[in-house]
Image (cartoon, rainbow, N blue to C red):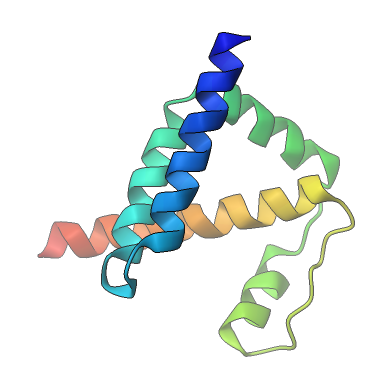
Length: 104
């Protein structure tokens, strides 16, 4: 039980850091959050389980809606599907941030 409580507190802290980060460092905070999530077996397990709820999500359509190329819609029917889409998006942001940091 204490593990779960500590994990919940840690997740809230990561979310707080993301929500309060200035735009100039938001990508870096996303990168740190993804790195941290990937180091948490329980969270990785939850995300893996969530990805199985809707295996045929149209991420490209979701992403196009965010870019303004198409009308934004949630192309998922479940919370697990939304989590899967967002997880993929933040992984993409973190990857871009890592590439930008490497070039600097």
